Image (tube, rainbow, N blue to C red; front, side):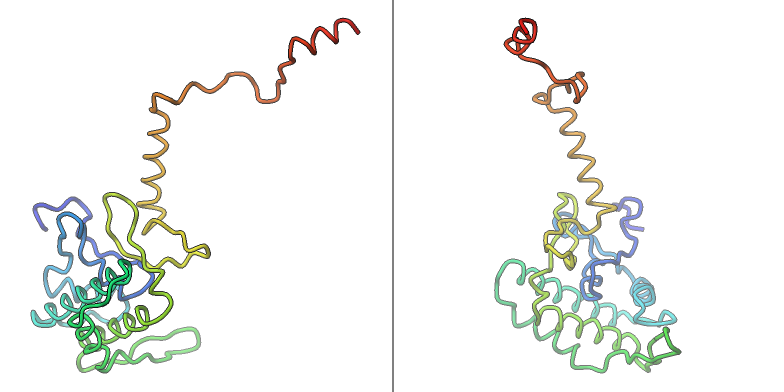
Length: 218
């Protein structure tokens, strides 16, 4: 464990909406500490198995770990360029395109309703090629405009906004979204401008003095 990390921080995260963005999630807090979740070849092997790109977990070399990190950073830079409206750096394009040109993990239909991947003699390379091809499809199409960064002030996770309105703000509603809502509620409760709520029942209607006097004269 990283002695500077907090409990659970080094756990591998998924759910970004695309496998290429899931790989980007293997770095945490890019805005501050930028800590590594793929610290060892074994961590990458676990990520590949949990992502469904390799089964069982393959053996991973130090060189393959370095290659995965390089691809991850290229994908991250492409995402940032897309969100910032900047042209992509040639080096990042070359890394992604280079991996996308390699043979990827071939899908196989096990039976109706169940699919998998054909065994490969180079499972790590095949998995990284699959990730790179996903990045090509993502950033080369209209969904690139739906790549977001989590709005939580203590999170920088990228995700694909697949909401109908295209207004999703949080990487996870059960995590960052919920924490933000709770924090906003507490701020409203403790705000000095928030006066006490009226104790009068909502259904009681106050009569004006004029209306009361008219009723008394009737």
